[in-house]
Length: 198
Image 1 (cartoon, helix red, strand yellow):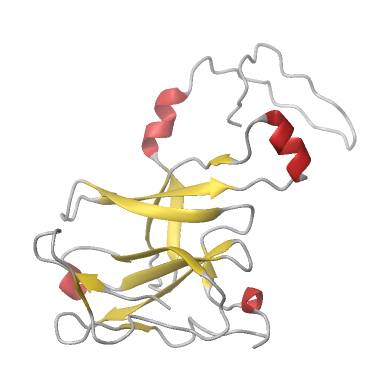
Image 2: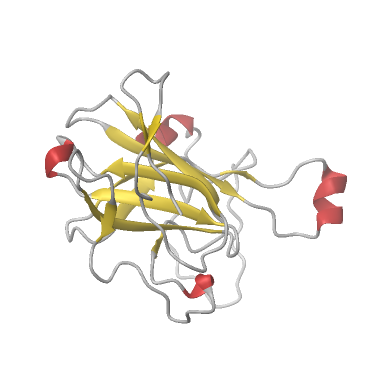
C-alpha cells in the first residue's frame, strides 16, 4: 500500500484521507516513487513505481492522478494484475529491468520544465553466497544512471544510459571487420581498465 502525504512548505505534512494505491498479497513495498511523465503535469500521465521485497524486482504502472480533486492513482486498464493470485512475482506490472536491479529511485534534472530529464538510479544486488561477499567486504553496486521517459505508445517507459556517461570514455580501440567463427577467440589489444564499452 502506498500512502500520500502533502505539504506546501516541506515542513508541515498532511496525510491524504484515502490510500494512494494498494494491491493485496504484494508483500512489503520498498522505495516507492511517483512522478509525472512530462510537464506541464496537468496533461501528463503518471508513474507509480515500487520495489517488491518478495521478488526483489522493481515494478511500475502508468496511469492517471486526479489532483487536486482526488488524491488517488488510477492505473491504466491492463497495467496491473497477476497471472497467479498466489504469487506477487507473477505480476503483469511493467519492470524497469529484467536482471538484478532493485530499490531504484528517480530524480529530476532541470526542474519542472519541458527540458527536464528524469534520471533513474538502481541497485544491482548481490547474487553470490553471503559468505563470499562478506569476505570480500562489499556486495552489489549502483547501476549506470538511466534517463527514463514515456514511450510513444504511452504504455511503457523507455530508458537509456545518461548522456554524461560518454564523458568517461577514452582510448577508443578499433578492430578491423572480420568474420567470427563459432567457438573462436579474438583478442582485442590495447584495452586498459576494468570496464569496456562495446
